Image (cartoon, rainbow, N blue to C red):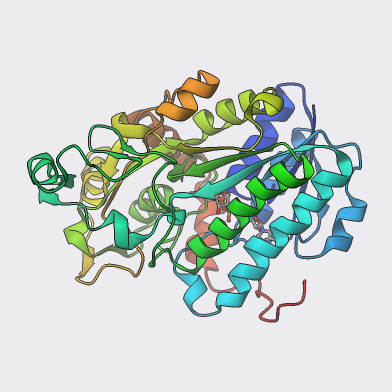
Length: 376
Ligand SMILES: NC(=O)c1ccc[n+]([C@@H]2O[C@H](COP(=O)([O-])OP(=O)(O)OC[C@H]3O[C@@H](n4cnc5c(N)ncnc54)[C@H](O)[C@@H]3O)[C@@H](O)[C@H]2O)c1
């Protein structure tokens, strides 16, 4: 198929572009290279025969230079940190919401489908964190006895302590983060454009994504960041919950397999919303990630601790993947150990580039981000 990937020089976008190109699809990527490290993906894209166009989704005009016969747009483009938005909320809204509207209009003109990378941050911390928890040695878990006592048979819609959260969970409430707000508005716009204008949209509300070529940082992309920081002796930090907060991780190979399948099912899946992650079998806490790194690298590393959790952070979030499996037949296959093995191999094989990025020039590599609302 003819594919446009916005944010296609980023972690997910570039991996997906290479994967789809290897599978015979004709791929163009559009990116403004604002993410630190994205420029390191350009040679990979080129060697995979992927066409790169420097463009910004905030500018409707930039879509004029894109192919007009695109069959599916993969929208992997965002300011993805849940922390940064509090400093400049309109930036996230402009980038992640208005940019998506331009992308939807482009898809409408092309008659293409659109697969949207939504997020678990569409669910309010207020509701996620009020579910009763029990503290274990390395992680927090849902306290099933307390949940049964409090809710009986009337569990919140979309929550099952056996499986986690499905897309039926409420998106109301507060404490989504500004990033989460920008994404839920975009997520709803996809649903509306599907209904009102027939754009075949598929929304994946992803949990914690991880893999090779993820230029993680402490504010975003923590799974790869943990391996990179361990390797180069960079400062690690637990923020709240004793470092026992839990996520389901989804590794890049599984993301690519799902999206290629969804691309072939656009008519059947149009307007659908799924929660997507590694699910209950692929979960880890920060402390468990530390223990795994200690085993792999053969040494420990100091981890600083800040007591107060980050605003809008979730303590335990696990995706209930049953809806996406029922609709597509897809299941995550890569487990935590295997996923981390791949990341660590990538770190080892690209030490020079990563050292340059993280150690030698950490302050100068980050491109200046335009602070105005105008498209850069
Ligand atoms: N990484 C995760 O854990 C995670 C979890 C849930 C959802 N998501 C979503 O997945 C998508 C991909 O995330 P990622 O981890 O690959 O992030 P990333 O930062 O690695 O990639 C995003 C890319 O978008 C580009 N970009 C940003 N603003 C742009 C703009 N205005 N115009 C053009 N390009 C722009 C950046 O330069 C970068 O290359 C994002 O939409 C994110 O919100 C990520």
